[in-house]
Amino acid sequence: MGSLERVIKLGDTKKFKSFIIEGQFYQAIELIKDIDFSKVKEDLIELAFDTGSIAPYTFTCYLLIQKENSELHELASEILTLPLCYLTDAYTMGLFHAKKALELKPNDISLQEYLLLYHTLPDKLLSDQEAEQLAKNILKFDPNNSAALNALKDIKNSIL
Image (cartoon, rainbow, N blue to C red; front, side, top):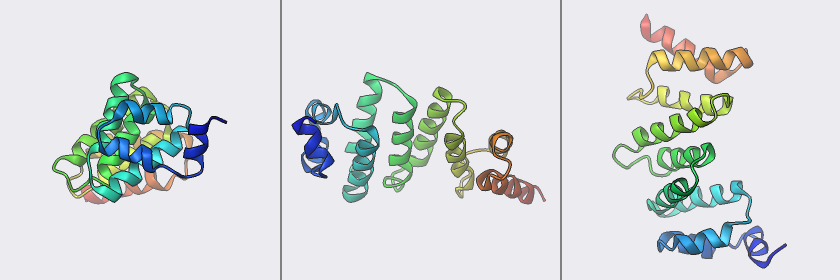
């Protein structure tokens, strides 16, 4: 195990987080290049919650420019819809990233469930039609999926 990996695995993410806040993305990438993505994801979401800064989102977009993938779009969406939800249009931009993540991994049921969240928002950023289609698709694979069943129930109740 390399020394950088050992530092991160021991929980010392202070340097990584400082690099992100300071906009030193090259250094941040060097620090995490051999680290499990789930740990990096956890640190970026935590940093956004702790600071309210858009730097973790900006870093995620920087990574997306280098190599677009579903996991990074999902992370960008989570940063916007959880810790940065107070920003104007954060949910709308989070929905964009969530849809892009699903576009890149169309059979990912967890992403489909995640998208249903946008139908539960007061502004219902996901239309009834989109939510119904997602819910029905989820139920093909998991007939007892509570998120999908609840979405269909909410859609039915909103029509009545």
